[in-house]
Image (tube, rainbow, N blue to C red; front, side, top):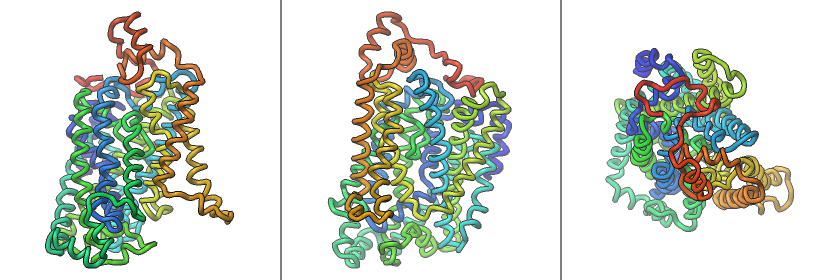
Amino acid sequence: MMLGIGLYYRQFAGKNLDNFFLAGRSVPGWLNGVSYSAALVSADAACGYGGLATVTGAFVCWWYLSRFGLALFVGAVLFAVFWRRMGLFTSLEFYELRFSGKPAALMRFWIAFRTSFIAMPAWTGVTLLAACKIMEPVAGMSKTATLLWVIPVSFLYVFLAGYKGIVVSNLIQMVIFTLGTLALALLTLAHFGGPTALAQQLMAEYGTAGAEMVQLVPPVEHDVFPLAAALAWMLGQTIGYGGDAAPMGGAVEGQRILSTRTPREAVTMYIVTAFTLFTFVLLVSLPCIAAPLIWPELRSEGYDRELAYGLLMKEMLPHGLLGLAVAGMLAGVMSTVSDNLNFGGQVMVSDLYHRWIAPNASQRHLLHAGKVCMCIILSMALLVVYRVEFMFNVAVFMLQLSAAELPANWAQWWWWRFNGKARIAASFGGAAIFCVVVLGPQALQWAGVAGASELIIPWWWQTFLVMGLTTLLWVTVALVTEPEPEPLLNDFYRRVQPLGNWTPVRVRVAATLGSPASFDRPAFVGAASSSLAPGATP
């Protein structure tokens, strides 16, 4: 079926870059919302959240409520309209609209590089690793055998159909995914006699820990996910959300915003994502609360608890439903992999290759180059699959690394005084602070330095510290350096009309021009895209 979709949309996708990477900017907001949920939830969610559920309990829902709930509504209310209004080809073109000179070019290059060579390979690799952790307990398949099943289909239909084929196939894949996960959730509850009986068995088996497993709010004291960790996760994922549509945290909503038909549809995309995403993640995480009653070793230190969902599938589902559940998991994997490859390929070809290497390349040349870029990202993702053991570690590492600069993502939209030098300080200074606070104590411990272990603090306090120190750094830089040139600030304000503290710029624009700005884009913005689809809104 996926290959059929790829062949059906092949001709449409091959016309130009807009069609291949943005579906001609004609995707309904609700479909983009379902597609975005599909990109964020697949086997990695089943393994990652399911594994967390075995050592936390029902309050694991705060892991994804903290990560997605508030953040998606912030994106919908405060940023979606403004991003879509600019009519960019990639969200990274923003940096050369907001900043000037070398800092602007450097930021676009750096964000493109880390998206293409760090974020997308890491998150794609995690998703493929999750597929392996599902298929190992269910079918006894090795990593290599699982990848040989998943990758060819995932790559072929995104290679042929581009983004249009992805969003259509995501809808079909999520129907299959939902049916499979719902079947497992219901059969698991039935096996233990319903939710009340399950709660009683957990409390009888684990005592105080069992009582914690059935509560809905994270306890103040907990080894894995205390209340402070929930707050750190929420702040780390919400602060700055929407201000950068290509962050390290794995969000790829840039394509979803820019491919919608209108700014209003971009808002719809975020709202639909929020509700469908919560439903999908709830279905894959809650059944795993029961898993320790069958396999107590899942709560043991060092045991790979991310196998819990696969073990439940094999234990609870009859052969027919097991096949449906496996198909659902693999469908989710394919949706995430295809989304990541398409988004990463778009950024790599437009913001790296076309911007710096081949500025005069033809549409056909760039289309072929984009497909090569997808191959490169997939190759790097395979390295992650074979070198990473636990997905939780990747998620926390990426959060902490990205958290350093998250407040700056809002500042670049809401504060006229924020300049390119402050943006560089946030990105590169934040990475340096991350290395000192997070990696430094670990390096000292590995080197055998006495007392080094006392310098290692829980990851949630590390996140707060890195974010706070980085914010202090870029605020200082913004205040002691010159703001961006007035013509650039005036032009940006007229184009976007952002919220926040733009009073001096707003007064100048009102006094000198008094009318909305043209939305014509400079040559370096949207240059990779020759034209919009008929009837699309730029």
